Length: 200
Image (cartoon, rainbow, N blue to C red; front, side, top):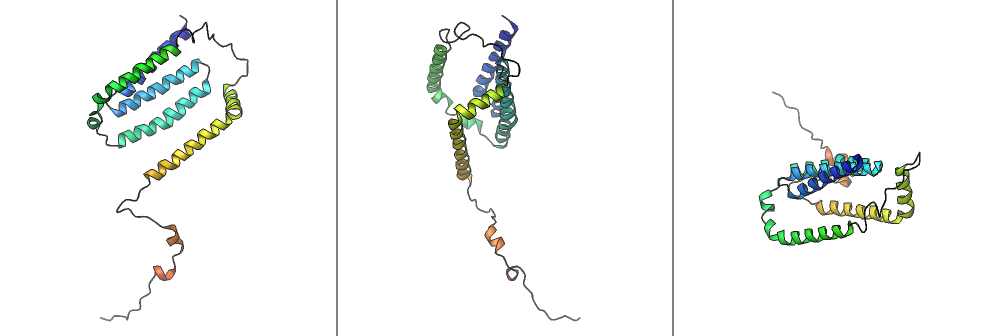
């Protein structure tokens, strides 16, 4: 076993452990931190595959932005963990059945018949000056440009729907109407009162 294969199996073991801890950790903050570890390890696997751009994007976007947001939301919300665990044992048989089906499917797909060095040999070394970022951009914006635009449209619609669903008027909250502010006049704001002078 060469060093590259050892690093791959080492990162793979950490990735599987972190993924299992994400769904089995009792504390939501710990689960989010294990997800950060899983993203970092997946970035290392991308580096082994010579996909430096994808590894950097995975670490910067997911770990640097998305997971920090997850941590803030989890720590700011008062989550009743005991209440969430009340229905755990009732859903365990269904979850175990789905997990077993997933393991069987992955075993069939990742078996030696479809994967392995004999079926899928290691790709040749890239020429000097090759950029996987440029190659990814060429494929993404030429061959898959319509699915890419469709995915961005779906994300935009989802963002608008999420804002619309969470935008509610609450009692006691003061709102400002810009139309009323623009249409205000001096007579409506200032009142001049004439009073006689008072002498002691």
